[in-house]
Image (cartoon, rainbow, N blue to C red; front, side, top):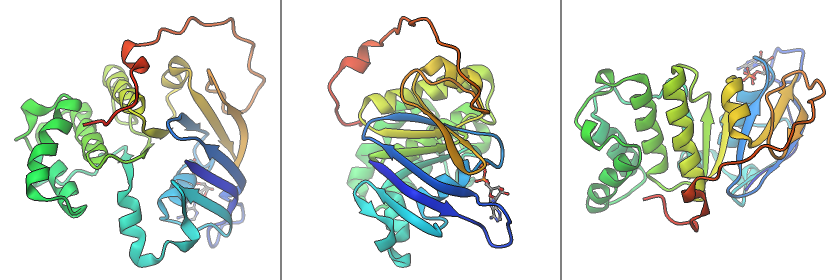
Length: 255
Ligand code: ADP
């Protein structure tokens, strides 16, 4: 669960608030898009959750943890409980695909035996088992993003946060990455994605939270539409939702 209660943040030197009394409640297993123009406060909201920035006021509780009580020395451990995916992948350039995933598990304290068991499974999930020995500069953008997602989900986080995960990808690759995030969501992981991609948001028919000038100006719980200025959204005819078979399966472990 992600809970922000009246969170306000102003960066030193700025005249405007980056977040202005933002309250947001995301239930376990939800898939939520966070949208808004550049400067609306999306990254700041994500940084509140990852505790890269501290709010001036308000309360943040993530997966039952009250972030006020996460001391500085415990922040890296707290962050490892979240999966975080970035637009620029942030892979280790001198390590192979396999090693990038293995390294994340090593840092998390997993035994070598368990790492050897887990990495192939997670690479299979993102369809990269056959690329395990390649280095990041030998991968396409979509493959690199899949490694980054593999690395994040290998530790079985309950919450996965993706900040503009498709910003550097073409249309086809974007839809592959979104499909992968959907699959991870079907396994029971809460997903929060920031994006500027109108098609992705409109096609997925998920919850859409819109930020404007640091405030939540709309929160469409179902079948959300990308509408940055909060202009009235035309009433839509009921859309036939095609449910993939795997969405009906009971929750189970990702790997
Ligand atoms: P978004 O991710 O939606 O583009 P941000 O959260 O990056 O928006 O920015 C929200 C506001 O906070 C903007 O006015 C931006 O200029 C300001 N801001 C963001 N990061 C900093 C920072 N490190 N120092 C000062 N101001 C910042």
